[in-house]
Length: 124
Image (cartoon, rainbow, N blue to C red; front, side, top):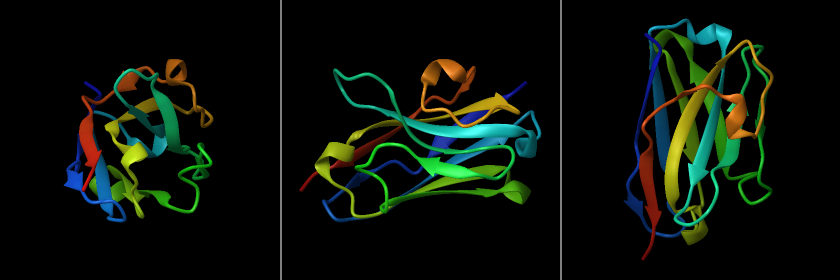
């Protein structure tokens, strides 16, 4: 059974860094495109970053470009989201999602398998 588990969320001060992890089980990670999404209270879920099964990666909102980096460790079956220079507007629940042999997409509807989410709060 395909399962995704996010971890690494925390309370951090503005300007700080966090590394989120998305650990996969029940499937071969190399064949799946993994997206990171976030949802702030009262807002729609938005795509943040994505790494495709072919190895390409992209960040979506201009606000995270240059600050967030996605990477994969296939041996550990884990996809990471390194987040630097965090700002209060980055506060959200962060989710990872998986889709088999799909192109990267910022649309949540294009991913069928989801983790439970991890809370990131940026506040002084």
